[in-house]
Length: 51
Image (cartoon, rainbow, N blue to C red; front, top):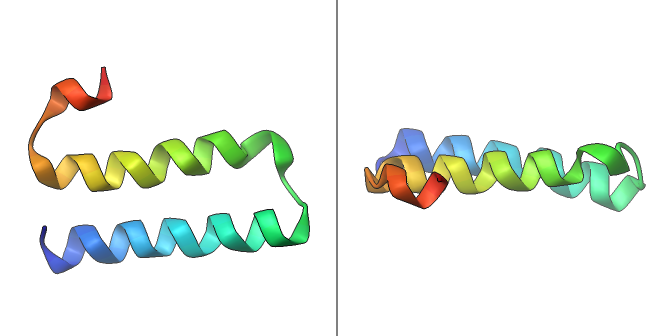
C-alpha cells in the first residue's frame, strides 16, 4: 500500500469517526464505510473485492 492510498483511507476514517461520534449524518455512515474499504481495496489491485 502506498502512502497515498493510506492517507486517503486515513482521511475517510477520520471523517467517519467524527460524524459517528457526533451522531450526525447517520444516513451516510454506510457510505463512509464503503469509501474507506474502497480506498483499502484499491491499493490491492483486486477489483473483484468491490463487486
